[in-house]
Image 1 (cartoon, helix red, strand yellow):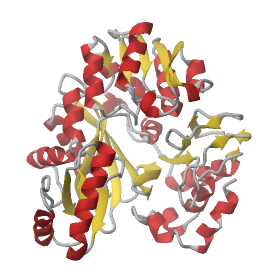
Image 2 (cartoon, helix red, strand yellow; image 1 turned 90 degrees about the vertical axis):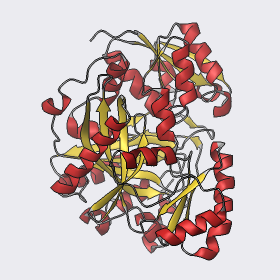
Image 3 (tube, one colour; image 1 turned 180 degrees about the horizontal axis):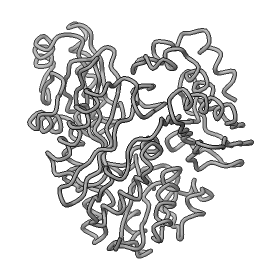
Length: 458
């Protein structure tokens, strides 16, 4: 391995910044942390080789401030930039600025980010490449056009922001009377959230599962997949629990989905790590979107495949060929990840504050990726995720037992968390049987057992 860079600036914070720092140090690379004034005492600041303040607490004045990030890289002599996930990770303009300044962007090309970030263009490219897509439309110009398309496709339908992601900008419509007002509202919300009011429409799948395929591709045209992750336990279209492999796939559908993901990446000449996300409707699946970055849930793939995906991402950015990853590694056992958030377990409202006591679980097959410590103050400016708890075992029943044990040991005091929600989910018969879909939490939010969770969240 002979990388063209030796110092990496991590344009992010929290758990993912620490994750990248660790990967870089194991590869012999120097690291530069950036931090806001609210993160002065954060662990990523402590463990990087260098650290530089880039502005006040609000993300728009710090972690989303491209001139400040580029200046930090130039001041410290960083030769590459890793965006992590969130913030600027899928901003094509950021990748372009990094490259124009003579640094390596650790990720795909700006063109790939821009293409797959435009959900309508991505849909069109995938359809042309033979990847299954749901019946839908291009960008809609009026409510009347939306109504005509919905009549053709059939209700229910879902309106989506063309520039959307992360579950934002979605509106489900069940009847024609609601479509007009919902179309207008969706466009306004898309404009406010993403700076672009374009929306499109797709057939709505009422009881889907969310299954995604991890792909890895080099700059020489080689693409492989590293199997699937099941991400159907969600709140507000955002993932809460992920596991690998998925219990919903049989061998035939799994093979078809893996092939479709590789086909999707090859069709656009993709390079770097990425994730092709599908909706599963019975034994049929449909392209949903492609995330052109490392995923929050990459850890479950790492655990079953024995591959450091962040190191692979860095290596590929340096121009190294893919190598025989698919021949050297095969899936092993079962992994499950819980996202531990500082939030109300029922309403999901953020719960910032200071952690007064903390105990992290451990033991064989248990991994905790986190940036928190006793005395750490959770700021109100950023995502509420505190940690990722990942367990690995030879099979799913044993992974579930290990996860229950680890959750029982996880203690966070001083702030509210969703730990009680996770403890409830992993005992629920639908989750234990693997017979859940993306509406699991919505379906059970009025259960008596769920109503008691808030009392356990502090």
